[in-house]
Image 1 (cartoon, rainbow, N blue to C red):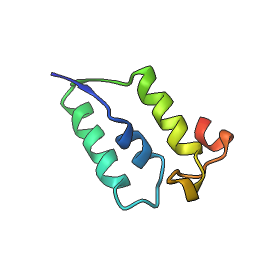
Image 2: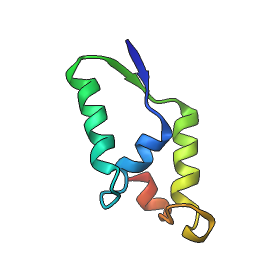
Image 3: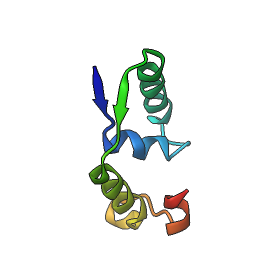
Image 4: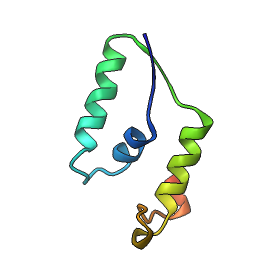
Length: 70
């Protein structure tokens, strides 16, 4: 089976202090261990970029451009 990695998974993985980070990493690890195909789309990356760089007061992560790129 193939899996599309949701933008929320990417967002949680980018926040080591988020309580859901470990769960997101674990879910991806399970898919990898099973040898399942997993994909990102351009849309996922655009959504990540917009959410990651949006200011905290506007429900974003408040990352700088360099942080989001990393």
